[in-house]
Length: 148
Image (tube, rainbow, N blue to C red; front, top):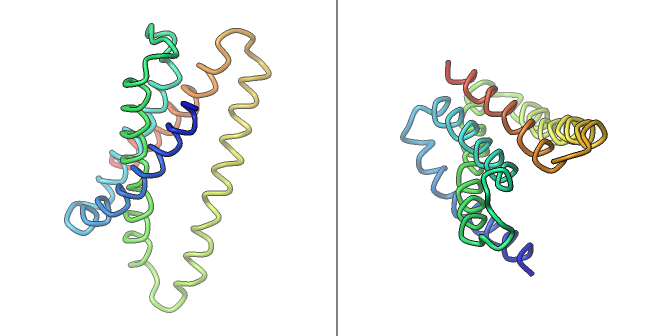
């Protein structure tokens, strides 16, 4: 199905993006790289959610595949950049620091689920559009605050 192909495109692009962004994280300003990647990744998700409002039909495969591939490449910058940023903070207690950092993904997923389920419960029309675009715009704002 198309969903399986989209998922495969995301995972392959994410894996390739980890290598690419690891290389870039060593050579660029890491905080700027991560902030821009988070903001741009969020805008890809917002564009995905707003696709129907933009007039994209469900058979606009090139549009959706392009967004998913770009989204994965941008989203994959968070791990290499985050590891580089955090590894310089502590020398002796790295295991504890990385353990705490690893829980951020779980907390972020719970917060994202709370936001999207709230919008799904409150809005009756265009639920998918709001449940994707609102958290994406909030995350883009956080990414932009990071680089300021």
